[in-house]
Amino acid sequence: MSEHDPYDEFRFVRKYDSFEDPQLRSDYLDQIGKTRPYINALRLRLDAARKAEKAAAERATDPVFRGEPRRRRSRSTRPARVVGTRPPNRCDIRYAARRRRARALVLVIVIRLG
Image 1: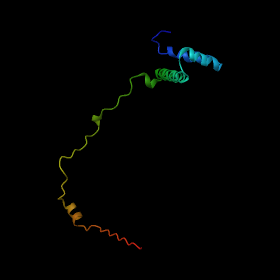
Image 2: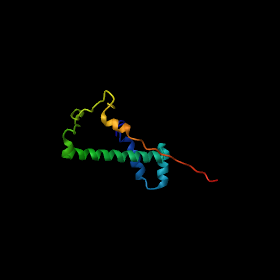
Image 3: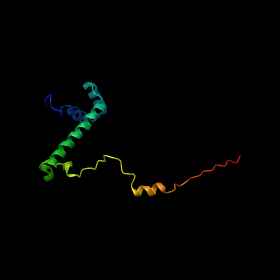
Image 4: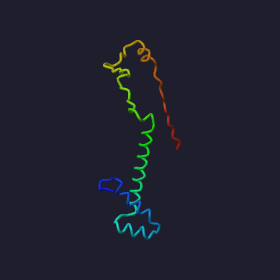
C-alpha cells in the first residue's frame, strides 16, 4: 500500500483484529504506539468508508441515479408576494362600527378575609 492510500491506516485494524490473545493485542498496541480508542475510531471510519462505497455502487446500478440529478424548480414559478406600501385605510365604514361598539369591562374584586 502506498503512503497516500487513505485505507493504509486500516492495516492497524486488520492486524489488531487478527490477534486472538488479549496480551498479544496489548503488546501490538504498545509496539505501534496506538491506543484502543484509536483502533476503534479507525474501525468506525473503515465501516463508514465501506458503507459509502456500497451506497455509491448501488447508486451506479440504480436507474434513477444514473442520469442527471433532479433539479429544483426555480422559485420564479411561484406567485410574487404582495408588499404593502401604506397602512390600511382605517377610515372605512366597516371599522367605524367596531369603534362605536362598547368594550367589555372586566372588574376584579379581591376580598381578603383575615
